[in-house]
Length: 148
View (cartoon, rainbow, N blue to C red):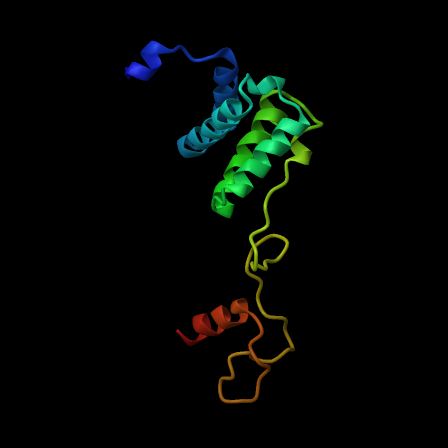
């Protein structure tokens, strides 16, 4: 048992959040990340996070953006807060207002998954015949896979 857990017992609210994450079989890394971000939020507002309103969440989100943390890290914070407010507290008003961040310059399909080339549009790799120019990095990755 660490000094930290012996010195300070876990709050019922944190335990409830951990239980909610355990029920949903979230990984240990995800659980640690979500707890970290809710704790950071609580420290930022100076009181229990279950008492926070829309403006405090917005101010914290803006604070993180101004610190210029990585986009993926910011989205971890958003996920943690959305889970806390939506699942643990059961609030329906707040989670939808906490927006995920779009990564600048990254274009994906709606599902984020790779899609095969459209049939009838020619071979974009130019394997011995005229082809359409490569227009995206996805087109280039298809060519690399085919030539390998």
